Image (cartoon, rainbow, N blue to C red; front, top):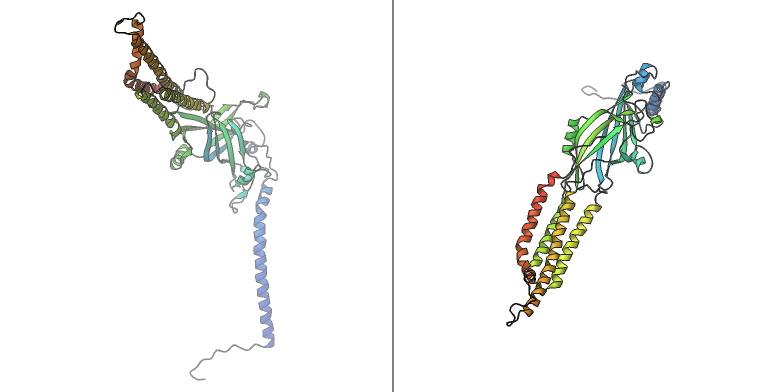
Length: 439
């Protein structure tokens, strides 16, 4: 009609309708094929890591380190390979003074370059769940001071911790493994207990390689490690760990292995770290000292109790003596077997305190003897016999012991606090380690 527009769907002929239906079916089949192609590509991507590794290791000799492979032989003049290692410690715990050991949990990280594993950079990196079965060279790392060690996949709890291996396009390999290790620390020195600082060595080595074959270096710099510790200090109960120094590519002798099984150089490369263990809480030891001082004051209070109250005086002095003795035994039980010339400040302090408590017990015995002697002298001194032959001057002097409480009330606390001052003055003279004793 004039002045109006009307849109109408054009009518298709039977032949046109057949062509449209065929185009719709073709479009549907194309979408289905595209979806199948996506799934196929995903499947290819899922297995491509193993395919890439298989191509890389087709002519790979895992018994040869990367430096030897570059030389084309196992020549001794091949350049040493560098392996960067690091320990990401999660927690330090179970610090045992008796066995001189500590436990730590965390991750052991090793990183090195292997030119034989360079591949197309279109793939970001290869990731595998374990080193075993990959067929590539890996450094054999261990802990020379370890008493027990569990690293990587393993069984039981470690099976859940597992490990990871990353192979980068440039041939760099990162090997990360969970670790649980108990280390021996020969640097424990208890001379200044409880104001002591312990120093321990921690080292990682590769006993199967000489320094001419393998060089170990720390992955993280000392400055970065210090920043990490400052942000998140390592604490374990009453102890706080602080790194003191770290050294890389240290040549250490191989001990505990028969000479026939050692490498020709008799040494291996290692990374070492010295760290200190500081008592972050003096709770137990300070409580021991405080209790000792209070027990001496309790013994001192006995001098104000009438000597006639024998049961109270004897029980107080004897119990104070036994309690200090029990604390002394507790200190010895918390320490390893000591040599006859090993001096421990806390044990010497408690021994002196125990002597003061024992003196209070002996003092009452002297007071009681003086009281009985004075009573006998009073009976013998009659008005008609002012100077009995039994009342010698020595007996009268001994009878004066009955007034010994008056003297001890003043001199006993003064003597003990003088003793405390002397003990704290000689504290720096007790043996202690100024740093790590070395490997």
